[in-house]
Length: 192
Image 1: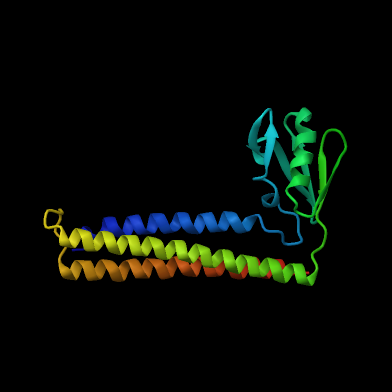
Image 2: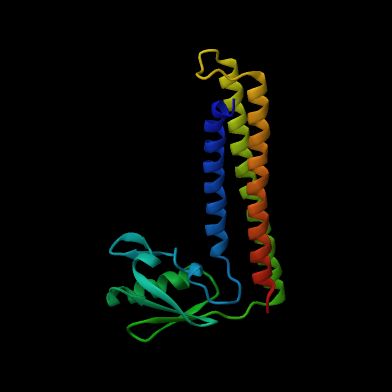
């Protein structure tokens, strides 16, 4: 019985893991008032006509809590990197010394902190919608497999109900992961 529903559960878990991972990457780029390479590492820099992620063009270090240092592998790309940071409208002004780029992270006001925390919550709702869409798809697959008498192994009505219940359990587990990530990020944002 359990082996007949396991492929559905494995697929649901894998797809939900990807949705949670994507959400975690998205919120990593949200400012917290502290320097974090995630703020700029995925910025696209126009490098010889190709939009290239910054983390593939340079080393990003955090020498101080409110400062990032970007050291490009190719010094000739420094101006392009500086332009990309300015164009990203992150509220940060890069300063170039000819070889590296220093970016000071300004402190966030209370109003900005509240807006960022609200943005994280909005993003979490989008992630939860993605998780629920996976659940819906899996339930549809289970119902199709149950109705299809040629499906091997045959899914009985009890197997289908068990599969639906377990997919719901997988959903709840992943929603908790999203909620935990939101709580941690909100706490980080609200720290002064």
